[in-house]
Image 1 (cartoon, rainbow, N blue to C red):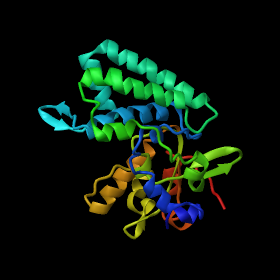
Image 2 (tube, helix red, strand yellow):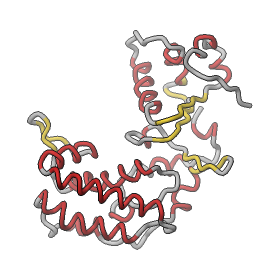
Image 3 (cartoon, one colour):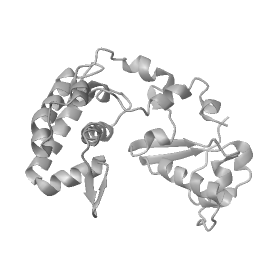
Length: 257
């Protein structure tokens, strides 16, 4: 059982390529209609943190140098310059609104403003040189834009005029969603409900099996994405092996054809 069992048109290769880091600034900032404001904010912070990582900057945590993430970047900036931090948050808010409200695939004004911010403000804080081939390439305008329709159309599905983006758990790690439907798939010859069905029924995990623990970790990532609604799709044959009475203590159960 795989994603294509639910969505036959799902493009698995494209899903894998979707995890590849964009090579230029503008490719980070493409409008994706299914994105929330928080996801756009995360996208912009990813631009800045990925850029610093590529330039060799690292975050000092308890004497260890580790890569910047969105949260580490904000934490560092707030620590060294609070006014810089609040200015960045304000500007990100404006950029997000502009991206959401644009009718274009890419808001070129936002791209130019973020480019200017990197070359002036971020550079002033981190003191990096603009005379860097990789940096110049990253900041250049991309002439190979792929529209949002052709880029992700195979993995965007529609139901009752709602766009549903389908992807792997790995592809959404770190994101926040309004709602998530977690569809069980095969993982080392079993599906998720076979690995942690007892936990879906409300029982604590006390085992120590490798694949059970891996399935639980993946399940945790998936189930901690949504803010408002979490659903899980389980095959009929696997559902019949679970205790429906216990499940009803934690879940509203709906049957689908």
